[in-house]
Image 1 (cartoon, helix red, strand yellow):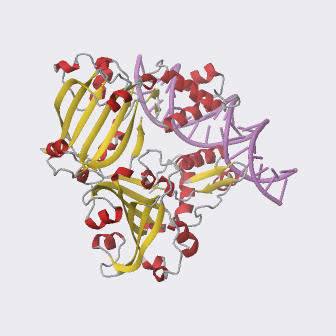
Image 2: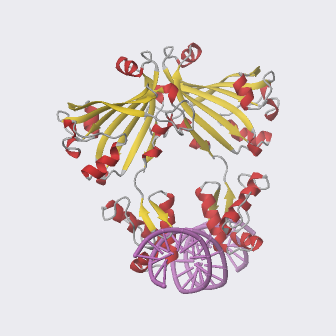
Image 3: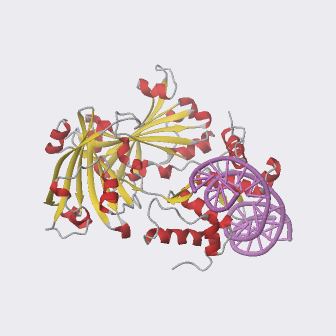
Length: 238
Length: 238
DNA sequence: CAGTGGTCTAGACCACCCA
DNA sequence: GGGTGGTCTAGACCACTGG
């Protein structure tokens, strides 16, 4: 329920967000111009500006002077994944090459089926990939997708690019809206240790990602397990 | 060098930030009011508002309607430390009790002396503390301070509170301005494993914190080592 | 050139805080 | 009541984009 005396600029924000959430506006779209919005909603352009300012700060929109204001798309460059590197905190210039190791339909662990709101018996699309820095294995990735999102992908006749999400959007028309990541550490089980060429029970970093499409529908459950000695996450406190 | 045609609001931001960086304004201080700043700098109040808006977004300032605008102080609640918990991502309501185990003057490992720009032979103030959740050890903390910052603290006659930084500011008059944290994972050495009551080489999360005072002077080098199974960091991507 | 966002102003009215 | 920040307006001028 929206408040009665919500500030006008908040209403403008909601108006724009509703258009995004309902799919009338998809990532990359040009939104109505400031004067247009001001007219439509019967507020001043300054108020529209303030609303858009806020959404730009939240990275929901971005502006191009002389062109207009656009709906942002999700930026996986903000993934915690980028803190895997040579042990440097920078994460700059490091090339991690990925290879697909497995691609099949499988019954998933129940907590994963549940997270994707699938019956535990239904098969899901499973993709395993491994990441290397100059031939050295550094991480292993387990991805679980709802199969109806990516029909036919398990046939293996489709090239799977490093960044799958662009393909999901372009080839399959499924918008990728947001994602949540959780970071923990653990010790490597035998399978993982073997894949990463480390001793069993060596420390590893576990990065779980839940990816969402429209209407908060989760479309992917991903776990990335990486060598702990190749991970460092830096942040500033004020 | 500042640009020639820098927008006015950027100049106002710089004006305020200079007062903070130079120490004329310290955390908690009330800054000049919007009309005052507008007069002093010969710009309109709207421009001052925009400048302050930006600094508030960056958490450098905060406002209180009817009172004024204040300089923010560092908020250690934003530390990655808060993601140590019962395995829940929330970090809410979890009480970690800390005890001081050691307090002495010691020669530090060279990389720490170096970080604090101290000659490697000089003794530093070392504090070791341990954190518990209901009697269960969950983390161990190694803190290294420049001894002249906290004279006499090693005598042990001063009570060390959970959050040391308030004491540093109030009792010793040293402003605590910012901090950097780096997160990695490792396996526990024997000493740590014993302290945390876990098996040797169990995975642990290592959180390094560098704390800075005025003029980017580093005043503390801290390493917090915690049980990996009690840590999880969650973030959202858009 | 017309249309977009970017900056800046001047002033109105409101809500909050404190003496 | 006087001062603070919070919202909102109307309008000016500029810088960038594309046809």
